[in-house]
Amino acid sequence: MALYTGFVVFSVLAGLATGANCPNYSSYSMQAHAPLSNGSYRLGYMRPDPACRTFNLSDVESTIVSMASSIFDPDLYRLFLNAFPNTLDTAIRWKGVAADNADEELTFVITGDIDAMWLRDSANQMQSYRSLLKASSDGNSLASLYRGVINLQARYLLESPYCNSFQPPVESGISPATNGAAADDTVTPPYNTAQVFECKYELDSLAAFLEVSADYFQATGDTGFFGRFKWLDALQAVLDTAMVMKTPTYSPNGTVLDSPYKFTRMTTRSTETLANDGLGSPVAGNTGLIRSAFRPSDDSTLLQLFIPANMMFSHYLEQTAKIVDALKSKARSGLGTQMHTFAADVRSAILRHGVVADPNAISRYGSRSVYAYEVDGFGSSIIMDDANIPSLLSAPFFGFTTVNDPIYRSTRAAILSGGSNSQGAAQYNTNPYYMHGPVISAVGGPHQGPGMAWPMASIVRIMTTDDDNEIVGQLKSIISSTDGLGLIHESISTFNQSKWTRQWFSWANGLFGQMILDLNIRKPKLLQRSYQP
Ligand SMILES: *[C@@H]1O[C@H](CO)[C@@H](O)[C@H](O)[C@H]1NC(C)=O
Ligand SMILES: *[C@@H]1O[C@H](CO)[C@@H](O)[C@H](O)[C@H]1NC(C)=O
Ligand SMILES: *[C@@H]1O[C@H](CO)[C@@H](O)[C@H](O)[C@H]1NC(C)=O
Ligand SMILES: *[C@@H]1O[C@H](CO)[C@@H](O)[C@H](O)[C@H]1NC(C)=O
Ligand SMILES: *[C@@H]1O[C@H](CO)[C@@H](O)[C@H](O)[C@H]1NC(C)=O
Image (cartoon, rainbow, N blue to C red):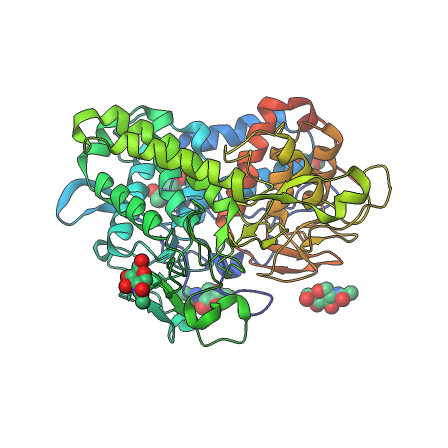
């Protein structure tokens, strides 16, 4: 979710929303601030001054205080203390209400060092606090923050359902950010740059709206909210977009069908534009899978039937159908059933077209089935994984499957191959984007390229395993590779921790906090040990 501008992505505009004397967090987060932690990694204290924080929640503050006794290691605690509140501390750029309805809350959440709101990031930025979410009508509550994100995402989806990242709402009075990279994009359907920051069609952006809606509903039981504003209309826009993106490249008689979405950009990076003059690689008909032009890294797909986003869409469609069921007659008759059916169809399409043999496993295990990263329905597939969620590694994390699914287990073995296993034995390489080296070994991706490992993938690895040794090993590598800054970077060179990207990546910070709170429930003993070298 970064615009690529070199190894360090500089902010387009960003600064803190409050207080004239508040530092620009884009620069602030590039240096470690005193007091340093007492462990050997000497991590900085990276929370802004209380007066400069963009949203205060007493539940988050009391969680931070109580975790001081749950976490033994001083560096691990410091990383948690910096990372967990990062979205609230720095990224709630504006919160208010709609001009035409004072009851309709709106929350504009920036991704961090880029001053725009991504559908995917904002859903996940909210999810990092989900364990603290409870029903409340208070405008200063977490529930209100969630409602504001859902309402603003609904507005965005009604405006431009194919786009991934958006400008501040007019009510905020914040000027739209300039996106130089997108200035010469040619996109069908067209969009308005006053509302849209970037228009890459990503299936997981649609799924993100379902995710944040389902998260809010499950935690609060607040059915009424979903019938009150534009949510049902936005849901219909999501369904219509996903349905039309099942359009294949050719009709049965061989004519080329008009693609509902096309995108080209003037760029030297192949991952920033689409093949075939904006169509993307050809996609077969009648697979039941939904196309995605771009991945959650905002890089183009090689083959458009992108399996992780289909998994995520199917899962959250199923969860969101429960909201529609609860709304009863407020929702269009038959809508809930249509959603349950659509979700089940995508799930069975994944099993039919998205499971392939791992060629490297044949000599060792006989034929072994894995989930492909992308397929085209004609028979081609890409076997790899990328750190960004949704990934194959994260499939149990977002609920599509469980860690015991045999296909997931063999997929995981293939994704994490490379280098040596925990016993030191050499393994074959199946995932071309598994990075390894002395600093950190983790899944990366083409967005920052070979040699750059993503700590986000290490976090997901922890959240999808029960193996204590694996968890400890991953935690050690995350804590030891922040370049002393005590924040979660986007990517890190596997040979030089001072070479990293994105000093201010709010979602990854929140995800780290979410993982620690999860460990505190699942594996509290692992938080009571030392992570010192
Ligand atoms: C904030 O800092 C970044 C990086 O140092 C810089 O590119 C940006 O222009 C600054 N923003 C403002 C509003 O000063
Ligand atoms: C670090 O250790 C010193 C001396 O024991 C103590 O006074 C201080 O509070 C500790 N700082 C942190 C952040 O734990
Ligand atoms: C958060 O609380 C501090 C005081 O601890 C205050 O100065 C600041 O304005 C508050 N921030 C917001 C966004 O309300
Ligand atoms: C081919 O099929 C499409 C859609 O099924 C139809 O619209 C078109 O008229 C047909 N063209 C020819 C040349 O048969
Ligand atoms: C590590 O990366 C930093 C930042 O890019 C660079 O300044 C430094 O020279 C690198 N160190 C080595 C040993 O290459």
